[in-house]
Structure formats: structure tokens, C-alpha cells
Image (cartoon, rainbow, N blue to C red; front, side):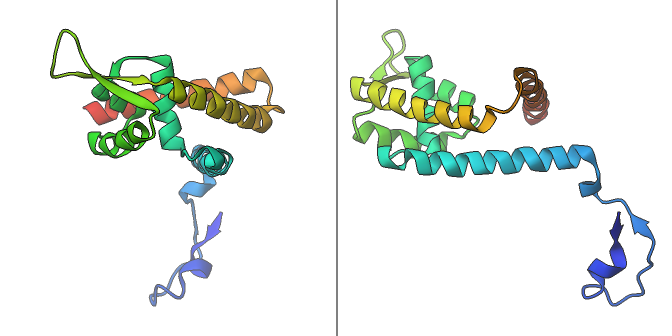
Length: 169
């Protein structure tokens, strides 16, 4: 419970009742949402620190891992997988290309389409970065039973599906 009068007195000159209000942070779903958001933010900050010596950031790693898994995908497919706009892609891809980590090749059937692939140097760097990421995940979740990890994963996948559907409506 939250005492509205205590918190809002300075902002609100009107007489405020001492009636108790239910605010979103009282709700378990809100608490869960905030916890997931904070965990994601801290994981990104930690991963950024751990990757610094490789001179890549988490958004670069997301691209590299997807190219590692899906060699030859298009820029549009990559943007869709990463849930980012084309402008974001057009900023990040040239940085990776200039470093010799990725290459763009024309599609043999459709000259308007560019296919993305890792170079050998990109493969090596990606494998090193994935080891760092995997170690961080292991360290963070080692105390969590596998069943709990699967429950969290299924819950997050359900949220992702809902939000993706909502975004496409």
C-alpha cells in the first residue's frame, strides 16, 4: 500500500485524502516486469564491459551471432530478427564491414538483394565473444534450476509473441 498524501503533498496543494491507493508497483506482474527489465539492463551493462577488449558492443554481437547462425541472410531478415529498424542496421553494418568482420554479397538470383556473411576474422571474433556471453549467462543463472529457466523463457516468449502481434496489428 502507498500513502498518497505522504508522497504527493509537495506537488499537490489540494487537500489529499489519506485513502489508500493501489499503484502498479503493488502488483506481482508489475514487479515481474520491472525485475526482467532491470536484469536485462544489468546484463547488457555487464556484457558491454566484458566485450570491451574485443571492441564490440552488444548490438554488434547480436548481428555477428545472427550471421554466424544464419549465413547469407539479407539485411531485412537480420533487422526483423533483431527487432530493429533499417537505420540502425545501416549504422552498425558499415562499422563491422570496415573492420573486416562481415561482408555483403549480391544475391545470384536477385541483384537488388545483398546477402550478409561473416569473414573468417568475423567468425573467430564471434566465437570468442559467444564464449564471453555464455560464461556470463552461466555465472548469472548457475543457481537457477533448469525448470525455472524454462519457465522464465516460456513466459518471455509469450510476452514477445503478444508484443510482436500487437506491433503488427
